Amino acid sequence: MSVPVVVGAYPKPFVGGTTTVVPVGVSRTVAVAIARQVHGVVATTSSTKNSIVVSTQFAPDRVRISRTQSGFRLELGRRAARRLAADQAAFRYRYGDSP
Image (cartoon, rainbow, N blue to C red; front, side):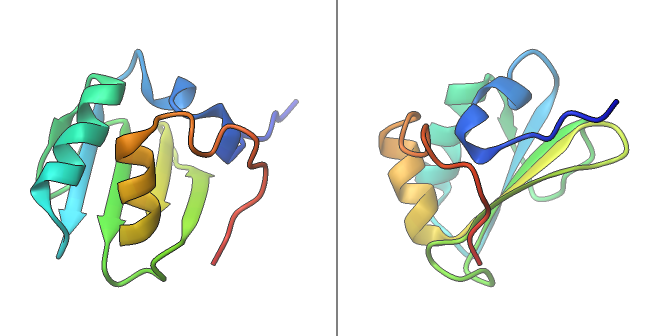
């Protein structure tokens, strides 16, 4: 049986495992704030079970969560990342991905 993971489940899928927050062209301050929420680390690569990628290469409001072979990956655009860094419940009622 497969149970889908939803954006609104944040931070649950990322707490309790090893999570790396990868900032790509964005403020390290935002990445540090998100890493604190999930008890993770900030690094330039994601080699851990779970990863959160914050990138200027994504649309500013992008929020997408997906399963990987070993865990989960959350992709955030810069504006979405700033919202999440300020309020970890920012996407609480969000169930789908956004581009």
